[in-house]
Length: 241
Image 1 (cartoon, rainbow, N blue to C red):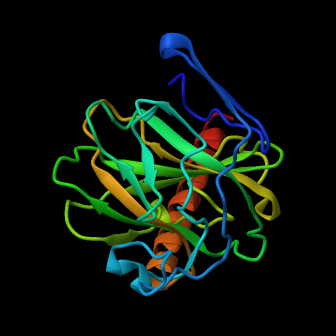
Image 2 (cartoon, rainbow, N blue to C red):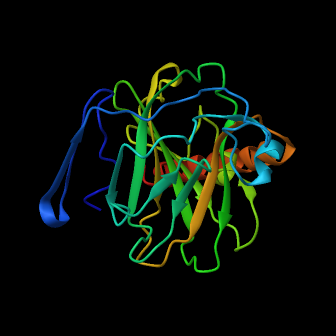
Image 3 (cartoon, one colour):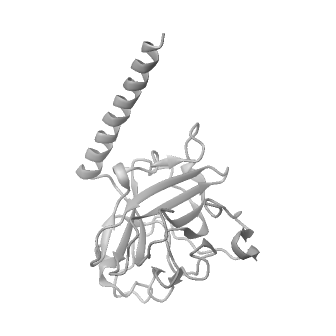
């Protein structure tokens, strides 16, 4: 996975893509809109699809600028339709082995208990099982949130596996410290690197949602699993003494 988790600085992006040795450099940055409510369908800036006004939570970012960078099979294929406010992940050759993103300046320090969510629509050609959202702080720490894709159909809002919250993501690059939620400097959408299956997904919202009963139940189940795993490891270590 030569392309995974390569990050750009807040002011300068320089990414060398291993296949073909392509080098891209730019000082541009995607615009961001932390905490803003989603636009209503009557607003000129609103996404064309009417689900936008019904989505829960608040938008993390505004999908109104092109991706700053892309890599892997998403290079020159993944795009943001800025007129509709929709990320388009489909086309010949685009698979789960890639990603794309933008710089940002997000302060999520008061949102640790909330979860990220994706408003998306899965197309009939999709064979990919999931997507990932990656958030990087000013120090380089990276949090990953895993999303299972639903069956093809209409617009749906999906939350991370195990009800993951901003304070407790599905995984961290450096397990010994938390993501600095006050200084989130970059976001990425990524495939799950599961293979070369076709990807056919549109995303019209990267959201922040408050935990409901379903999310809390998922977190409680994860806590029980974690406790059971720790107890098993402890028992195994005791047995070796």
